[in-house]
Image (tube, helix red, strand yellow):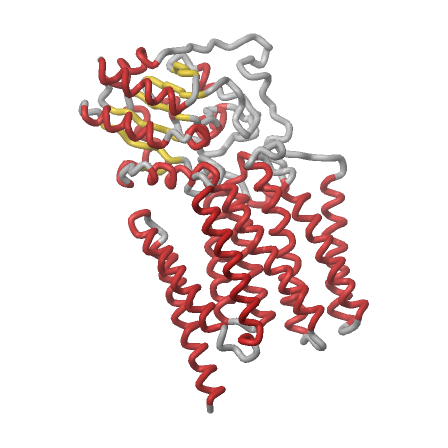
Length: 469
């Protein structure tokens, strides 16, 4: 009787937890409700963890579980206080990797410690090990690229596709052997080998992917971590973990497809295409014939006159804004311009920055009204009627080569049509390439003026100058 009541209590807690997790995703769909969505997700996961302590046998390891939670919670709290908003993509990559690594290690541990494993459980363990290990090392490589520890450009090597094909073939053979051979020391050794090969595959899959594709890769790895969690839930028979993992996996995959479509590319091409590995453009600022292209430099005072007397201004933020931590400075400039009656809006490209929603998060931190943020499809047709476009640290997402140069690697990728505006001002440190590794002809457009320098300093100077015009 007691066991039945306990099981019913656990199932009820998991059901409520699942409802909270599902509802939290709905609340996360808009910035206005995102905070409450996070709180609901925390409550749902907390309830699931609480219920897990009532599972038969878990209480015997309660001390170790609580200790692990304190260590993990302390590390998470420390990271949340120390990690800057500009480093959020790296933090998300680490979280994805930890989720995948946990799924892989739990799967391997369950297989090694059990006396017998059913056929269905074996398959869940195999897939959990594979997906988790690939997510772990793939996410660590993504972190290293985003944090500048290794080059953000695609890293390729001879016979790369052949190596990956052989590695996947080895994984397939090992998986079949494990399922066919059944229990035994040899069987368990094969799983360890599979785990190690999967770790290597995670590295070789992400190394050739360039920084321009990192937003999609982050979303894809997030989905993979969820799938790994769901598979682990099947392995340890935990319904809450299955539901939570399935939600993360499905939402992450859906986001990956949406972002890939926003780049007019397939997920297969992003993962296996080594995008940007061999740029077709010449050196920065050079034409196809090798001649230097014109660049018009400007000052904050000159730009102040242009924007101060404009009727409409569109700000296009990019990763350079994040690096300079200029989100508050751009909001201050916006306040000055709006006080003068200027209609100011922000154009957000789906893959601007280094993770999904990166620019939205940064601007929300500076209390930019959500109503002022316009998605690409919503604002692209308005650029032709815009007096001034301020490109703050963006590069590839405003490159007109996407529609004008069939030989460009980004040809066909939907971009913000900043080149159609009457005046274009680009705030940038230098003429260096973006992560796509190609020239941006927008910088050489006769309508474009380059305001060189740190974006934050340039925006502060520009806001001061606008007050004086």
